[in-house]
Image: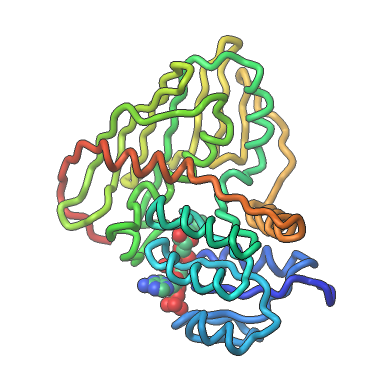
Length: 310
Ligand code: NAP
């Protein structure tokens, strides 16, 4: 950390902040965590406030914020951040709706601030290698499988089952963020089958079919009821052979051979990029994954299944 380091605040100190943001920020010499705003959470040794308004009023040196609360509660807080001159990092998904994030982008532009809508899975170690290796091939079909046990990853997180919480699309959108990064052409939703527990407002499973502008069919299966081996993979059949991007973008198998990939921490990479964006006076707001989720809900053929309890 140096005197010229960017003075950062965090809003919404919860699971992802403790697991990923705090270790990544502490390793970045260009960032200094100077305050948090959270109703219940705090970080040892860092001044803690209950709301963003209190944090802003008490911390005149604040330059940037990372907003890490669930997506349904991010828009109002992001507006306050941008209206107070703060560069703003949004956890994924960047908001509960496409239009609210578009508004945030306008607000950032008008105020000459950097807005970074992060997609952590795009920073997976093997994603850029896969993109580059597959860019010269003819894609024939794609199969995306994002299957995990919700009881293991999201115990007690009521917001994820509520409207705007996205349900199984909360992890599924990570797969979409990688897919849309490596795809050689834009994709659109052709059909969507969504499975809702009778006591929840968000789906527990989704079966989707996309097509690219070039006619490549894409099948996607998202499921939160996985009991055995979990799967976060994208399989691509090409004219020259098969590719498998697995473990959420960390590993890559090309034509049956596992490539050696240099390790990369997703959140360290995110914060490096946030610093770069601020220094360059730029924003990075790609809403493509969120639009595909919105379209999947619009076209969604809904099936109701038995109630789900944690
Ligand atoms: P979380 O722990 O359930 O929530 C984070 C914090 O947000 C909470 O500790 C809470 O802090 C605040 N919050 C909760 N409800 C709120 C409300 N109604 N209004 C304002 N603040 C509220 O969630 P998380 O797992 O960290 O996930 C947060 C975001 O990170 C989500 O968008 C998620 O998709 C993304 N993410 C999560 C993971 C993961 O593994 N968990 C991985 C990658 C990305 P206070 O009560 O102290 O205010």
